[in-house]
Amino acid sequence: MSTAQTNAMNYQCPADAFKDRIILVTGAGEGIGRAAALALAKHGATVVLLGRTPAKLEAVYDEIKAMGAPEPAMAPVNLEVARPADFEELAGLLGDTFGRLDGILHNASVLGEITPLDQYGYSTWDSVLQVNLNAAFYLTRSLLPLLKDSADASILFTTSSVGRKGRAFWGAYAVSKFATEGLMQVLADELENVAPIRVNCINPGATATRMRAMAYPAEDATTLKRPEDILAPYLFLLGPAGHGVNGQSLDAQPR
Ligand SMILES: NC(=O)c1ccc[n+]([C@@H]2O[C@H](COP(=O)([O-])OP(=O)(O)OC[C@H]3O[C@@H](n4cnc5c(N)ncnc54)[C@H](OP(=O)(O)O)[C@@H]3O)[C@@H](O)[C@H]2O)c1
Image (cartoon, rainbow, N blue to C red; front, side, top):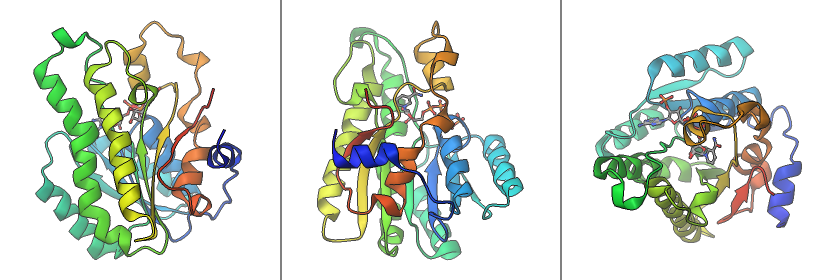
């Protein structure tokens, strides 16, 4: 196990680790993104909640406010249809509001079909690649100037075991996660020694969420970790403790 992986697993996040940090989380309305947004806020972050369904974002917003954590911001964005100009507009709004950004957790994804490639739907292919890969690139590119204005920024992409070794029937989802690993590596290499921005991937591993239930409908979800149980490596990589870790793909549940 690498040093970064060991440190990430053993990380105990101090209560104020994210004080004065502004972190954007995609897919913040449900599942792992929701849990990560709540944990970041609990540790002092001002969280920008990006997601498709405004009602879910509002519920997370209310939970964060009720905790007494810094007031979050909401960015209702459908990553499947948003164009580069929409992300530039979002970057302008965040720049006007906060003046900089200290991190992005790219968490939103869709599963698509679990189907052999010779039967895989063309439109599903396009939408999975759009949400899981293209939108993550658009968002990253448009927000890079704000990240460069941070003294210590972190970009964290979400990968999967099927993005490291291909598996039959996982189609566009697996391919999108391979590409996400590639995007992370290219960007990490470009920014190394150029800007105080580190770029990494996290694989959450099997976690009880709606996506997991779609992929494994017969599984007993009570045997799985819950989103709130796997977050130590996320907080490690997104916050000050992850300083110096760049270009790595870590596991939240190493085997
Ligand atoms: N759960 C696992 O076992 C597991 C394992 C490996 C990797 N992962 C990865 O972990 C990440 C989180 O997955 P999860 O299990 O928490 O999934 P989830 O419960 O299905 O949540 C996915 C989130 O992404 C958002 N999203 C989907 N399409 C979107 C769109 N077009 N625009 C904006 N937001 C969109 C959803 O918003 P709505 O709620 O509004 O639909 C939801 O908040 C994903 O990257 C996934 O690939 C999960």
